[in-house]
Image (cartoon, rainbow, N blue to C red; front, side, top):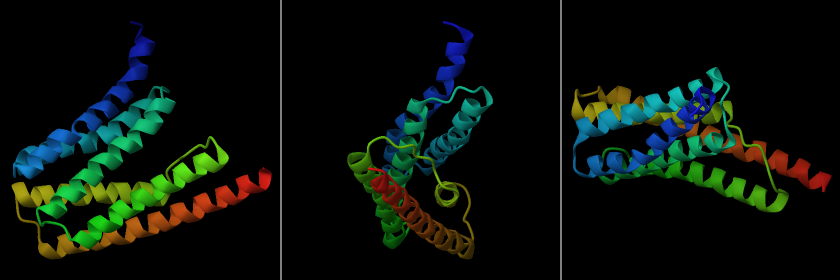
Length: 188
């Protein structure tokens, strides 16, 4: 196996690992093993930055990795939000906003693909902030459940911030992709 081939697959393997860790994260939440959940989720969070850094640093980004990375992120976050809401830690309305945003993006991308064909999907700045703040909130929740109590006002502020940024991000994606759809329809 050549060194170049090895470098090219490492970011994808890291992303795949993050995807595979969704099940153990879910099981550990349901079992109330929050220290384990925190460790696994922290590994996932670090791997999210690491795979992208390696892909850029060694110029080995791939279409497969570009598609798998957001799927791994979203699956991890959606499953985690559903389960920490189920166990009564986060409010239902917040999980509904986070999940609705992702469903709107997925539905929009699917409709765009059906109507106009191939597209280059890249996350918006608001989308990156939304994902980052969602990861931070989940980490805060897991720290609160497993290690130390986090001041409630700080937790409430993080919840409100995730709500605002996720809402703005969802609106931003709808506007951005509506414009792309209008432009694509004019070219047909």
